[in-house]
Structures are given as C-alpha cells and as structure tokens.
Image (cartoon, rainbow, N blue to C red; front, side, top):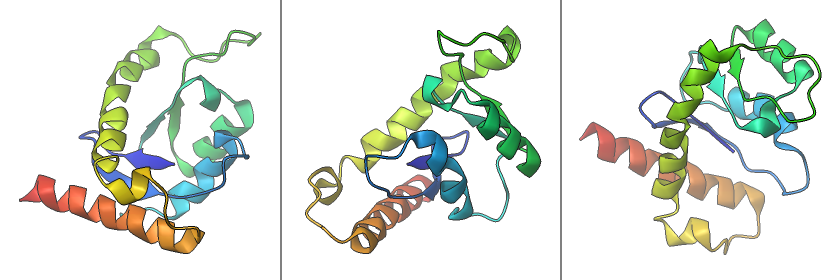
Length: 132
C-alpha cells in the first residue's frame, strides 16, 4: 500500500499480506510516512468507503475522498469532493514507476522486512529522479 502526494511522489509505503482489507492498512501506512506532515486529503477507490475509516482519518485531520459503494444507504459526500477522485491516475502512475523495478514485480524476497526495504529503496530512486 502506498500514499502519494499531489504530484504522484511517494509519501508513505507499507507491505502486508494479501488477506487483510485495505481499509485496515491505511493507518499503519500513514504511521510509516517519510514526511512529518499528515496529508490533508486521502483519495481512495470504493474499497475505502467506510464510516469507521472516515472517522479515524478525521481525528487525524485528513479528509477521506472515496466514491460510494453501490450498497451504501446513507450518502456522506456530495459531488464536489468527488471531483478530486479524477486525480487518482497519479497514484496509479506511481505504482507503474515502482513496477519498473523487477525485484518488486517478481517478489523474490520472502522476508517481509527485506521486501519493504526494496520498496522503500524504489521510492527513494523515484524521489531522486524527480528532484534531479
């Protein structure tokens, strides 16, 4: 899981198994961020549409922007914040940059700590390429 800024540069990454839901991984990913500031907004897909997650992020001062799931009864957002959802392509571009590293695509590292180190190294390379 990764959190990126408005320019598509990685701010926080975390590695977990495939079984837990993404909603449960958001706070642990934000705790492991590279920068001291907390982002103002978090844009996610329909999997992030959760009232407990929205409340937890609101306590941290983060606005959650996610389209509603089809089975949601009470709508919590109008269309104005959802216009920012169109910028989610920047997040997908960051994952495409990370997939340029063969070691991340084909997970040869079986130890989670080693794999996280390689993901962080990939983020460092992406940040250095954008800064230079």
